[in-house]
Amino acid sequence: MTAPALRYGRPAPDFSLAATTGATIALSGFKGKSDVVLVFYCYDWGGI
Image 1 (cartoon, rainbow, N blue to C red):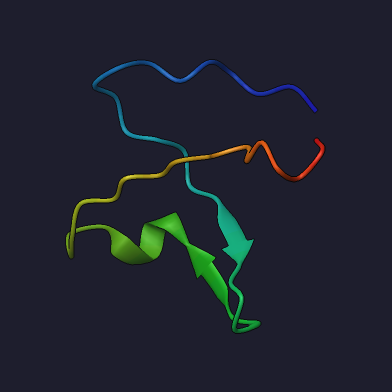
Image 2: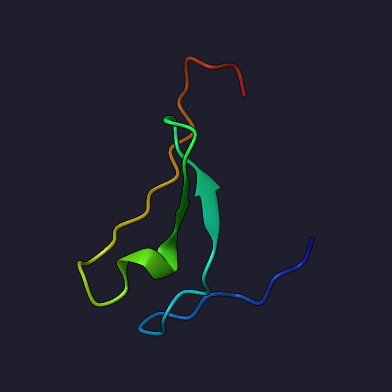
């Protein structure tokens, strides 16, 4: 899968992910409602 690079100060492309509740959460669902901070943390105790 290849995607264009994200640029600082530009809107992120829309995407959706499964939540732990089983619901699907889309970035577009937050537009105009709140700021979003997205962090991917690869924990060191998981062996990945």
